[in-house]
Image (cartoon, rainbow, N blue to C red; front, top):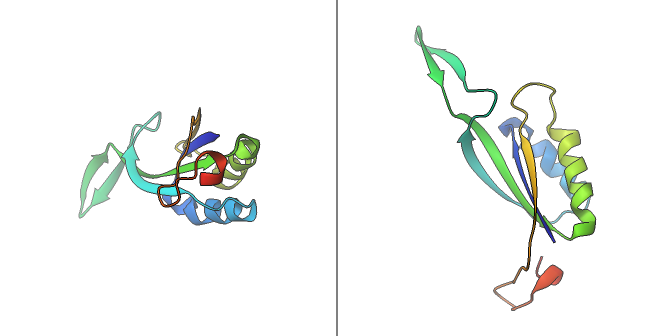
Length: 112
């Protein structure tokens, strides 16, 4: 099994979610997060005062899938989350040793 974590722009969430649903991905966890990378934040003006936003709001998706579906998920995220601008985000892929459904004690891919 693979865990795919993607940090994306907030306005891209619905588009990414729809693409994943079309690919048959049934579940994901999302979190509202803030951070910065090469973008290093940005400046905004509020009531005539300019101030620096150091931590940019983003959405973090966490998706656990069977290894055979990992490339499908990654392709769907890349296709829909990309704007071509700095700050589009990142995708991280890691191995998952096991998953256990608490309600039924199922483990492995059947727990997904």
